[in-house]
Length: 402
Image 1 (cartoon, helix red, strand yellow):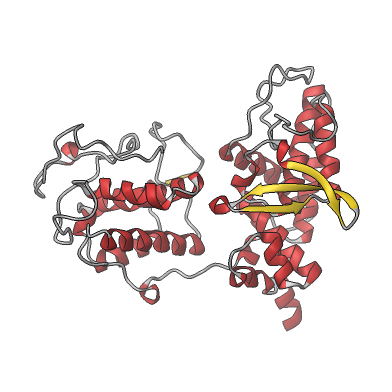
Image 2 (image 1 turned 90 degrees about the vertical axis):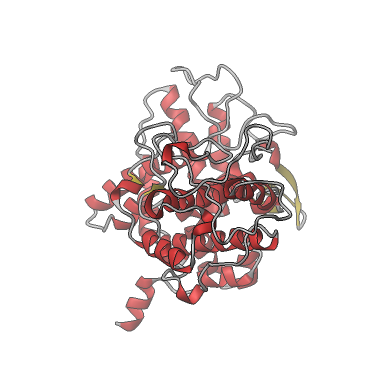
């Protein structure tokens, strides 16, 4: 497990007073970001002094929570780690406190801090953690993202209280937190914007074999997410997860998805998606349709593609950052097309990979009007999550009011 805590024998942990300089604070159990101080590890009034956790610092206790809470999904573990680190960086640099020194008013202040981040805490684009340009946040978090952050942190504090590491839970109730759940419909694309995205894909250059393959791959990228409502992390495996089997007596292609929390699901692939998949595989000079034990990634990186369009080896899968970058490029071109038509570019300029999932689920419900079927399509554990997509979008509401 990657999120393993530091060995107690690695160094002798000391209880430190508030007068210790920031440079001497012990680091988190994972690599700290470049140009940031080590996290304050003072034993605060909320620390019990003994617990079920065989650790000596707040950060080590958090690392135990990360291993436990993220054991089923690496993506969940990474997401939780990111939120915990943001709180600890804020606590160290802004409040000059350790986790066990934070009181309820501190968490209320952190909630307000999230709602209006200073520029010094935000990146305009992604940088590696060892870059001097790295910041804890990629832009201003949305209202729903702020709410999710506080929910994750509340879960972390609850765990530490139940394990006996902390005496009490200082997290404010949901009513006291100034964030609120966002409407996913408002973070999706309209049919007109989807048309601009498709035009953006069609306008990609195709003068060389390499460009033709890149265009086919990006078309497949979009149609896969648009027709399946895939999460960004769900397309990291190989095409052997696509299998052909009968559905109501007709042979159909089905995607065996390993989804959030390692939950397994089957989802039929549409003919539109299969067509784009065949175009890509034809460009890659492999079998037109996936085979058993097919080694080609669902979303292959084409960094090793020659100018003649041939592969020098089995490609690596696109990582999440690369997928985000590809969609950003697609959305940028789509925004230019929208502007040429006199349309607003606001949504396309703000869009992300996850907006495609929101768009897909909203369109599915609009077409079917079936909440339970939409829940199955979206692979939501709770139908109340799906019900948020049943809300009419603002354009329909505006038209109805008029």
